[in-house]
Image 1 (cartoon, protein in one colour):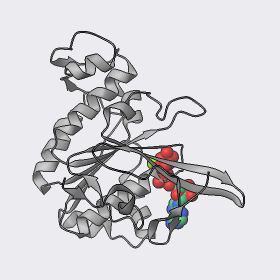
Image 2 (tube, helix red, strand yellow):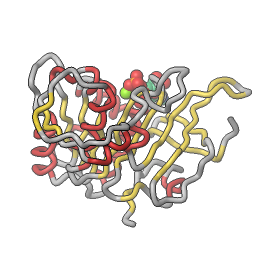
Image 3 (cartoon, protein in one colour):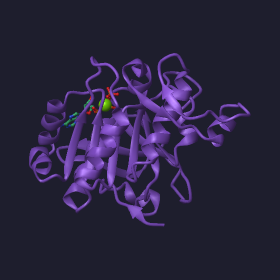
Image 4 (spheres, helix red, strand yellow):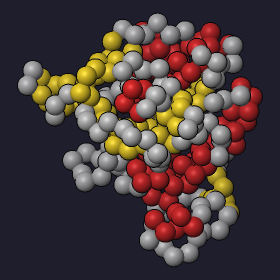
Length: 253
Ligand SMILES: Nc1ncnc2c1ncn2[C@@H]1O[C@H](COP(=O)(O)OP(=O)(O)OP(=O)(O)O)[C@@H](O)[C@H]1O
Ligand SMILES: [Mg+2]
C-alpha cells in the first residue's frame, strides 16, 4: 500500500507510515479539539513536499485559515500563489452550488493529491443550498438497511442526514485524492459522529478529544480504524504548539 504521510510529528508512526493512498479518513471530535488545524497541517506538509492539496471550507472564512496558518509559521498565501494549495470557500448564502464539480475542477487545475473537507456536518445541514448528483451504490443501500440501490439523479433537500452524508463521501472518493473528511462528534451520544454513519463508510477514523486527566484537561487522539492497517488503538496525547500539532507517547485515559 502506498502511504501518504501527514507529516504531523508523532502521528504517522501510529498508522504504519501514513494514510493509505486514496482513502477517506474521517476526522471527528467536539468543537475546539483541533480538527481544522490537523487538516491544515496535513495539507501544508503535503504542499511543501510536492503534493498539492485543496481545503474545502464550509465552516470558516478563508482569511481566518490564512491567519491561523501564519501563527504556525506556514505561508499559506505563497503556497496558494504557487498552486500547491487551494482554499475553496463555499458560500452558504448562495443557492444551487455545484460543490463537487467545483472541487473536481480545482483538483484538476492544481493536480491535487490531498483534500480536506470541512465539514460533512455543515454540508448535510445546508444541503438545500447544493445541487449535486446522486450516485449511491448497492453497498450504501445495504448499510442503510434498504435492499434496493438508489438510481442516479439530481438530489435536492428532503432526504435524511445519513443519505446526504453518504452522498458527500461517495462524491469525494471520486476526486482521486487522499481525503480527510472532518465532521462533528455526537455530544454525549453513542456514535462517534453526529450523523452516525460516516464512521462506517470511511476507510479510517481519527478521533480528537479533550480529556480530563489528573493534571487537568489534555488533548488526546485515537485512531479507531484504518482499513488494511495495523493501527495503534491507544489514546495518545498531543499538543498544539507554535509549529502545529505534535503527538506524544501513548497516554492513559
Ligand atoms: N496558535 C495556537 N497555539 C496553540 N493552540 C492553538 C493555536 N491556535 C488555536 N489553538 C487551539 O486550537 C483550538 C481550535 O482548533 P481547531 O480550530 O482546529 O478546532 P476544531 O476542532 O476545528 O473546532 P470546530 O469544531 O469549532 O471547528 C483552539 O480552541 C485553541 O485551543
Ligand atoms: Mg474547525
